[in-house]
Length: 305
Ligand code: HEC
Picture 1 (cartoon, rainbow, N blue to C red):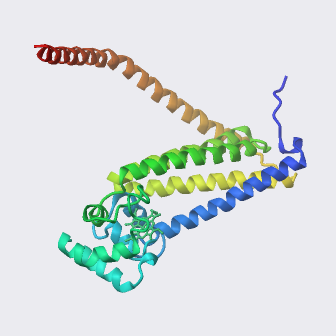
Picture 2 (cartoon, rainbow, N blue to C red):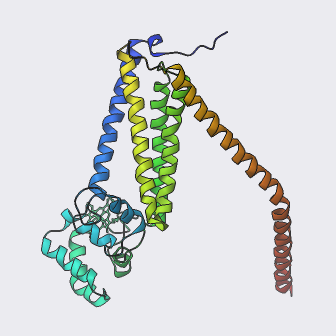
Picture 3 (tube, rainbow, N blue to C red):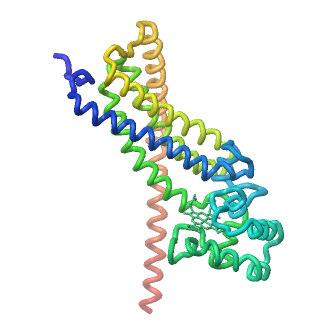
């Protein structure tokens, strides 16, 4: 007996309305997310518009721009400064050797007036602390994105987007199309999201990984957009069935077998290596544990005396 798989033609109009509104809302939300990304990153390299340099600076840091400098020089924090004279004062200080004395006399008053309402550990522990010299120096020397911040953004990002992809993908499964193509379109956004997040961390050390960040981020957005558009189209326009010709189907399944064969080979190799090295690693762990236990016993003995 054939398995029962529901398609859009099997679901009620109210369900279709619910799904359509959900997909449209997610689509608009994604456009806002892109706009937000543009506003926060575009000026990092001092030039208008998004570029690979902006992404490199966001994660790896920059040789000639500090995080403080790019935040106030065309960046998102510039509008918090009362006047552009203050911006130039701060930028000039950043170009010197940044002594605590100059900081106290010229920089601290500006930050106290315009920035510490948000940037103080009591008010907002997750933002750079601008209430003292050490805190300011953290963002005044060019450094990569701080690890704790990146870890925080990653877990929120993965949890949030996984749910979005789950629901968008669940609706997309109602589409009428070649099964293998559907499987590919379901898998791509998840894989690219994972690669994207992982490459943020790699870009901290290898700036050229910014290209992977951009490519995988774009792929995720595109594949999610494709799912949304195909779902909306098939929901309301019955004739829009997406089927592959026999030869396209054959090529696609060839690619799939190829990928699966490589994955199997890779996993088998990994398993073989695992079996080969585990006894050695385990023996070393045992030796280390015995050594530590002896040390602890020695320490306890010295206390007893
Ligand atoms: C209304 C609250 C608010 C005020 C006022 C404010 N900031 Fe921020 N600042 C934030 C928030 C929120 C973030 C983190 C958002 C982000 O990374 O986009 C941030 C991030 C930063 C960063 C880190 C940027 C990075 O590369 O991660 C710097 C540096 C900074 N602000 C400097 C300043 C300076 C200097 C001032 C004063 C002129 C200032 N901020 C005023 C809220 C504020």
